[in-house]
Image (tube, rainbow, N blue to C red):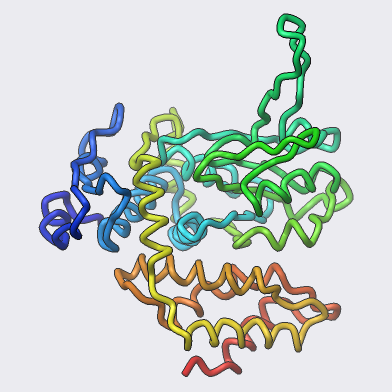
Amino acid sequence: MVPNAQDRVQRQEPSPAGFETWSRPPMTNPTPDVHESQQNRTATSSQHVDVETARALVEDVVENVERVLVGNHDEITHIMTALLGRGHVLLEDVPGVGKTMLARAVARSFDGTFKRIQFTPDLLPSDVTGVNVFNQKTQEFEFRPGPLFGNVVLGDEINRAPPKTQSALLEAMEEKQVTVDGETHQLADPFTVIATQNTVEGDQAYDLPLAEVDRFMKKISLGYPDPGEEIEMLDRVVGHHPIEELSPVATLEEFRAARLAVADITVSRDIREYATQLSNYTRERAHLGVSPRGTIALLRAGQARALLAGREYVVPDDIQREAESVLAHRIRTGGNEDSTEIVAAALNAVDPE
């Protein structure tokens, strides 16, 4: 459970010299009682927060999303570690298990801009990035931003669009910018893509390019709920859906501050060597192993996991808990062995000490 605001403030360390703390103003239309603690969360004018404050923010967001989703605590936490680690998330599963709803609930927990792209076979790259339109009044071309220009962008059924359209995401996901007609446009800060893809109807979908798959920090599957969780879900959605009443519990400034707190988490040389050895193991065992980008993603996810544990440093357990979701989708075995089995074998074979 999220601690109340008074306890949270009492636990805070004195502000470092040069930082002046301020009390966060209430969010608009907060849900009574549920989000009372968020109204009093403290931060600093220089976007400096300690680990406990950032951890409390994440707990608030997770609790808020769980008002909509039932039985997906681990998956929600995985998404939060990806967002805090400056990564993107690919949700893969069968239709109807809540992939899109999960992405919407996470996005609505922040007060930033949320954009949705419904990928279809006839979608063009310009439909995603934006296009230059001639203005007859000014006799000049004007750039009309596409739906990529948001803080959280939901790419729904991303594998239904052809590779040419999917490639429009490559520059955006890696460099946080798009180039249209030779002109570069910066995307929002923060910028995160949460994409969904179905695992059925393969004859009506396209394989994601490997360069695009590698840009997703994590790939997560939800699975079917157990009977008890499904009954609770039905109780919640009878009459109206809780997503319609979901209010933001964190500002963009707080989210940026939490990202900075994660970036400051200490990663020792031993942990860096451990992550490198895990990646090297996959390269030796698979047709295509984990890229250096994947190793970086693993360390960043480990930093976020350490923050959730209330620590200012990464331990091997943080790396191990993140390894499968960060590494497995980057591996191509070229045989009957599953990529998750290779990750599991790497964790067993590589000594973190």
